[in-house]
Length: 295
Image (cartoon, rainbow, N blue to C red; front, side, top):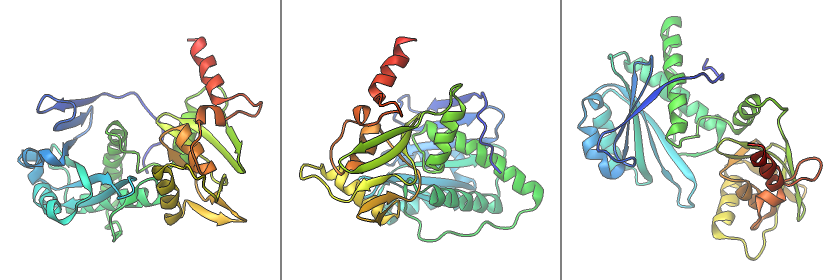
């Protein structure tokens, strides 16, 4: 099993073409893995690298037509050959990240195992839309090989968030991890506006609305298209479900900001820093201002 306990570590990101947005090579101390990260426009140069003729697992990232984050997970005996097929086969993706080993330590069974685990984690987390239509079972590995694969996976999961990929960790896990890093008990925030009843918590890269929160079924006339599409997408994915004239969150779900979270709950625009309050009625804005005043 992968470890949920953070630990100090060193990660090296090499800018192969000298720009932060360009081709990047990511390595981690005491790890035999390597990640090659490239935008679709730079794919030719990335696929020409020596690492890309090796077995590995890869993730293609982009957006749905509604603007929600979307990914595809795959594995290959030869990464370059397989990813090249997706240039004409899949239109949604704009960025790719491929993982391989620096010591030829990954074989076909290893990468199939990693692919299966990543797909299972993405499906369980339900934070990004997944383009895969098949979810292959993990191949049987002996105890030692499975332990090695899980260790490789744990290191991948450290790198993903650095690259803006939060698809493989459930929002509930992030909220718990954020809370465990604090000396004080976790702060639960509440929203009670326009018939919506929400509970949530701040996390490092956004805001998590907790399971059981109730959103308005109705939407305001002035609701932005993005917010309307976000609510519709969450209903299609089962994150929001009808209940007694409202929409209930069936799982914890992470949003990019408190305002987006509040907007989905109330069915219109909302200032999350004012809408979210603690049990004493203090707004998130006031809480954040107090934190800054003691720094």
